[in-house]
Structure formats: structure tokens, C-alpha cells
View 1 (cartoon, rainbow, N blue to C red):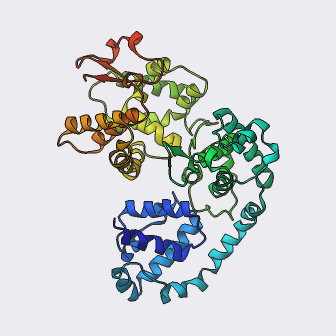
View 2 (view 1 turned 30 degrees about the vertical axis):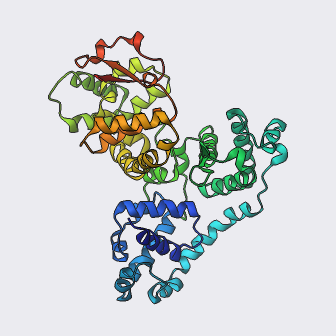
View 3 (view 1 turned 180 degrees about the horizontal axis):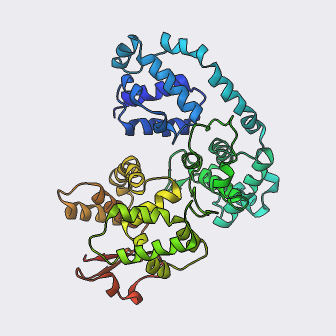
Length: 431
């Protein structure tokens, strides 16, 4: 999209939610672009579910109501043609009607207000860490983890309900004070806002602290009727609230109508079907979904991969893997991967081709080689291969640390395991 169109979408977001954090605006703008929003009239075709990856339900309903109300007025067509639209009467008239939304926002403010007075606990950080920060050096991974642990501990003293907004504000404060030591930098270039990796560490720590006490899926069932997610199903609500992880990590009960014996029968049926060539995909999906409880029990008990391959062969097939991933995370595997590849993959390849290529001789050689090998081929799979190989070159890694090359006709059972790295490896047939 052009800069004018990007400004138009950003303006539409800011008009309705002016206090939204800049990072959230970026995510929302990127989401709307991926949906194909090109004019103001396109907003009327956006659904609430389309925005839940970036906004809370109340926020999503608020912007949709404002946008759709504006699309109903004659002024909207002329303003959308003119580029970045200014505030209109229809949008202004919506403000009084949004009092309920405002009150909903205000009920969340007491939980956010503590951020204004939150002080980074510098005095509780280890002396070694503070000395490192003061000298402008990069802290070791161990020191950084300890810093994150202390930060989350102090944040939880202020509020038991920590969101991404909180982690962003804390990360911005601490990185602003010690940018040389904590900013996200690769070869002298600041990546994004410079504090994204610290935000992710804080979020992961918060999720780990939660997970150690109460399973997430049970916690979410305790929501009240006044919750702003009361119209969202529990599974989808969990998927919205989690920044990573699972919504069905540890199931406590068998599915209704199922017994240990019926689960075992279905498991054996799947093993038999895995050896057949004309299986019904829908039947496999149904059996994999109904035995998900038993699958998770075996995984959480620490069953090794080799045993899982023998007992659940479809788990290592794209069909069964997609079913398990959907049940575990609430997201479609192929759709999620493709969407993220479309949103971020092109940006990464563009960076490699236009910026990073001038900083590494090896990367330049690899890029030239891949362009010749690729020729006229295009598509998602070609982009994935390019990204993986270029990232290896960018970080000066050897291909044999990730790939094990075998003959074109080699079968999985014929691979000599003593030739394969102990670390996760992709076995490639042919060069």
C-alpha cells in the first residue's frame, strides 16, 4: 500500500482510539492492511473477530461502531477519495453514544493508573547487573533473565492482572535509561522500537508465573458476567488473551461419552489407518480430535518422541499435526503460518536484499546464488526456503547444523541417524 493509504488507515484508528499505544496501532494498521482495507468504505466489511488479535473486544466494538456509522453518511465517500479523512460530523455525533464504551474503558483505568507511578526497582537489581548497565555493556542472558524476574515480581505487587500494555510501558522505561545495554540491535541497527525482545521476555515470564499455579483454561472459566469478553467462547477468549502458549495444555477430564477403553480403541484404529493408503481424512481428523485428551496426557508425562511416533503416527503427518495444533493453541497451523509469512516474511526478505546484503560478503554470495537457483519460481515455499538459508548466512551459521542431506530416493527409515546432528535437524532428500 502507498504511504497515503497507510496514513489514511492510521488516521482512522487515531480518530476513534487516540490513546491507543503506538505499537498496538502498528499491529492494528498491519492487520487492516492484510484484510485488504483500501478505502473508508471498506471498514463496513470488517468484523469484530478480525480485530481481536490487536484490540480488546470493547475497543474492537467501539471502532467498528464509529467506522460503520461514518460509512453510512454521504461525507464518507468524498473524504475517502481525498486521502486522509479529517474528523466528520458523523464521527463527532457518535461520541455521546459511546458513553457506555467510555465507562467500560474507565473501569480498566484503575488497573492501568499504577503504571504512571511505577518505579523501576533499580535498587533490587544485582550489583553486577547495575555495573554492566552503567558501563554501557550488554548484560549476559543470565543477568537479563534475573532482571526480568525482579521486574515481573514488582509488577505483580502492583497488579495481579498484567497485560501487554503494562509490559510495553515498563520495557520502554528501562530501555530508555540504558539504550546501549538493552536496545534490540543487530550490527549497529536498532530493530523496530528497540524494546520488543524485552517485552516478549516480560510477557513470557508473566505467563510462566501464571502457569505454575493454575492451568490457564481453568482460570479463564472463572470469568464473571461483567467481563468484557463475556460474548467470546472460552477457547477463543484464551487464544485472544495469550500472546503465546496453549489453551488446552493439561486437560483434567475425558470428553463426554469417552472412557479409557474407548480412547485406547480409537488410538489403535489410528495406528492401523496410518498403514493404509486410502484413509478418509475426515475420519482421521475426528479420531485425532476425540483422542486429544490421551495425546496430551502422554506428552505431559514426558513420553519420548520415538515412542510417540510409534503410538501416534498421524501426529507426525501434516493432517494429524494440524488437528493437534488447532486443539492445543486455538489457531489454524497452516493459516497462522501463511498469514505471518505474508505479513513479516516479505519484510524480512526485503531487509536482506536491500540492507543486510551490503554488510556481509557471505550473505551477498548466498543471495546471488539463491537468485540463480530460484530462477522464475515464486510462491510461499520458495520464500520460506530463501528466508531460512539467508538467515543462516546472516548469522554466519553452517548449513549442516540445520540440514542433513541424503540421496533423492532415501526413505525416512533408511536415514543413518549417526550422521544426524543431536540438535533439531531437517533431513533433505537431494541437494
